[in-house]
Length: 235
Image (cartoon, rainbow, N blue to C red):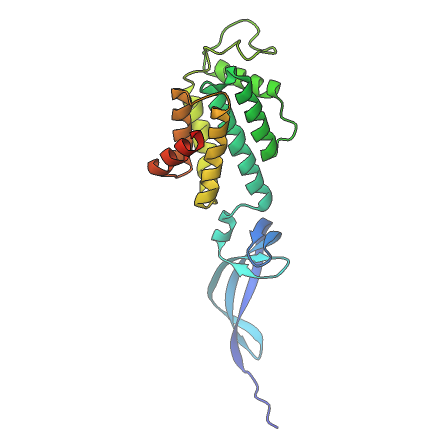
């Protein structure tokens, strides 16, 4: 029996640059990773002797050792994705209340229920009203006494309408990154949660409808789909 001796070959030497946590497609869950940079080396009798150039950078799962391109880190971890969903619903609830739903108890109760279901289990009506008061104060639209104290639902009813800059910034920051990781049905469900809050105390107010249309646009829904969903929810 003859044995074949391998005289030369190419081997990749890996160097770990940093680490972190990511969603591993192979494992199907959150795992630790190493970011590794490789260098190819020519070997003679299995001994590295000459560099053959870089082998690129990979993300290696520490559990299954599968290697991926760096763009695998663009997908949020399960923990991060849950937080993004929670923050999105919270922002939409505040936006709808800001647009006119804060004066009706059914809308406030629907907002609290949606926020609790999204993950803020200790959310209360007083907390939402306090946040609304802070938003209005930041916009410079509420200067009445007691702005920093406990406020009732009617104490800033005239001031909440028209906080456009806050709505635009917060909705874009909370929803646009999330939309990239949701399928169309998931994006529709997020919009419908806002619609149910707005409809809890009656038909859409014009300002509520405008906010919900903005929510739909931030979620990358078409105008046709937005109209279909909002009209269907109100039917």
